[in-house]
Length: 89
Image (cartoon, rainbow, N blue to C red; front, top):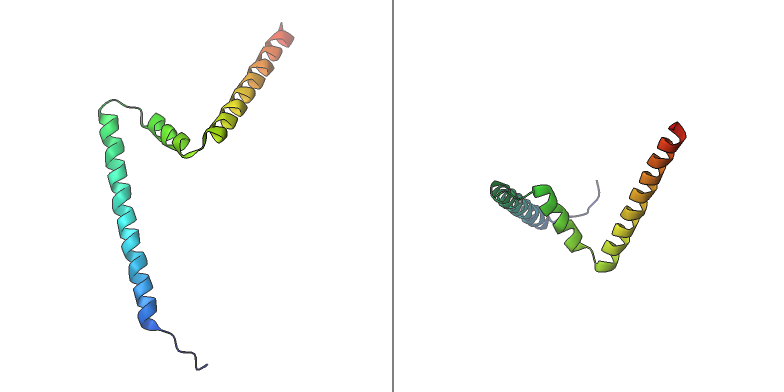
């Protein structure tokens, strides 16, 4: 074996800190679930709320680009669908 000394106290401190953070994250996630449940109980659509949260994290340019691509793809699908109908007739 080598003569390398492993600082067990430091390792333990890091592990304990990480464990505490994991516990805090679990508690925060539980609180988040409770807020969504409360919103749902008041008649709000949770999927839409999550989408709004996701959009708010993006900058305006990124949102505009996404909306433009979504619109472009939707129009392309609609045109493909109308072409099928025209060919069938």
